Image 1: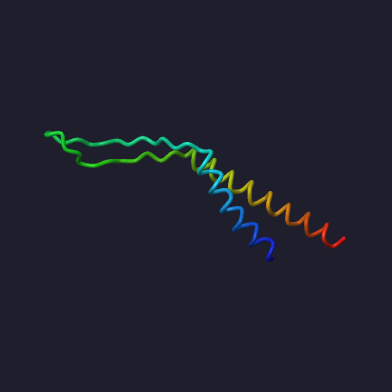
Image 2 (image 1 turned 135 degrees about the vertical axis):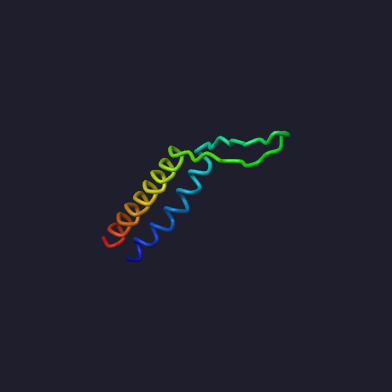
Length: 78
């Protein structure tokens, strides 16, 4: 149980760090302009590819850490 929580938390932190430095986010920003040129509202675009790639990186890092902890636990018992 401790191995699962440790891999979940460490994998989330590691995946966040890897995603921050490797995935580039250049989202669109749309502005609604009034008649006099003033900005009425600004809408930010959500990039679904960025979100899915982020979740995949986090999932892979969680799995890798869990497998490493399992292998190290078996080696240590020998």
